[in-house]
Image (cartoon, rainbow, N blue to C red; front, side, top):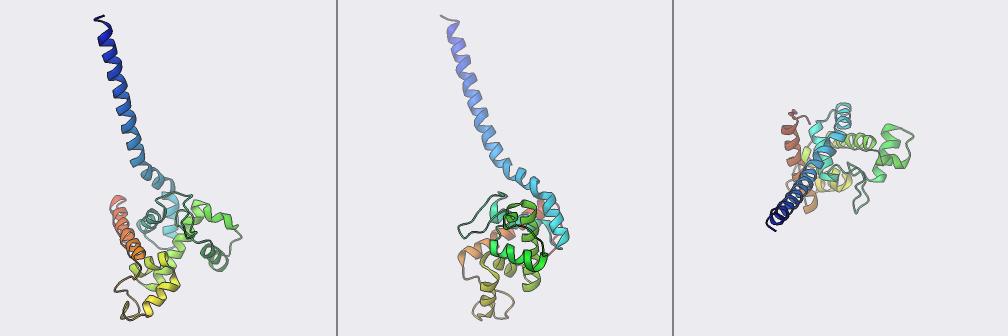
Length: 193
């Protein structure tokens, strides 16, 4: 009888230890999964950044804000993929700027989605000449932001925004800039907009 008690205690302790290890590993895997997803797409981000004269940190920041590096992400508005491109925007870019014969399903391919999203981001930065305004346009739409810039209560100079009238877009710009600074530091990148 005396020898059975220590075996039960040892078995119970071992089971408890295994349960704790399992819980810790699940938490660690969950925390490390974003880093793993970042690594999956890092080379594509570098290629797109180089092609369109952008900081890789900015592309990473947009992807993190848009999809958190989930390639199959889809928004309620219908935006898809890592950089959450609207299918109409993808088709317009494909037909007008890239002149490629890609199917509409190509929007789901991570390298294509990153390349098109980075191009569009670069286009918006050149058009609006302001990171905040370009990010607002990426989120709320280029036409909508152009209207905001015409509203003197929002933009006294027609180039910068004193405030963003949509809370979601204001939060988007703030979050993306926060992630931009994070990736500049994490990957030891230089600011380049």
